Amino acid sequence: MKLSAPVCRRLEKAARAAAKASYSPYSKFPVGAAILVGSGKIYTGCNVENASYGLCNCAERTAIFTAAAQGERIVRAVVVYTPTETPTSPCGACRQVINEFGPAAAVVSICDGPGRIETTLGQLLPHAFGPKNLL
Ligand code: THU
Image 1 (cartoon, rainbow, N blue to C red):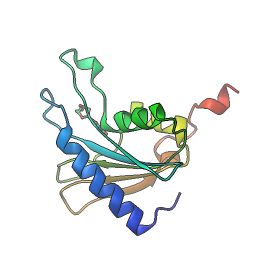
Image 2 (image 1 turned 120 degrees about the horizontal axis):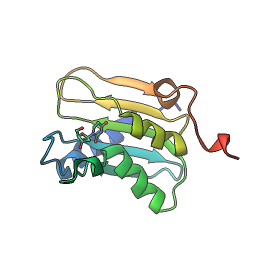
Image 3 (image 1 turned 90 degrees about the horizontal axis):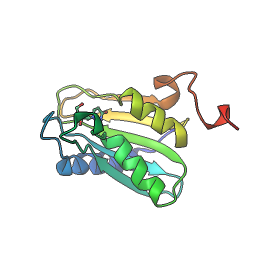
Image 4 (image 1 turned 135 degrees about the vertical axis):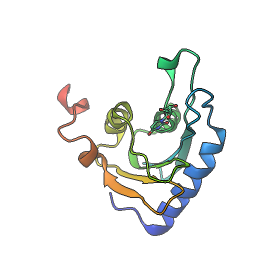
């Protein structure tokens, strides 16, 4: 979906703010995410790590699971922020989770440098396996 400039700015501000709550003592790589959902609301998330490293949860999935737990079922856009010089794209696991609720979602990566990535879930995860394969 095409994001309007004001909505994109709101999502970017929310993603930057969300990174402040990151719990990332192991990687020291804080990440914030903000998503626009079907109801028009914005939900945010940060990465939450664990001493058992494999249990770390990415910012994008935190935001999506938070929204899903409030009954949201459509993800229209995902913005991910990292305090880096270059933008960070969602990991493979997060792409799969975004696909569940937002196969056509806009995905925007922002950082502290001038670069940004503006793409779609369809471009990040072509030929995805999803709910339609099971129904
Ligand atoms: N991480 C995210 O939260 N989102 C991404 O898009 C990339 C990686 C987190 C997971 C882990 O806490 C840390 O960044 C380093 O991989």
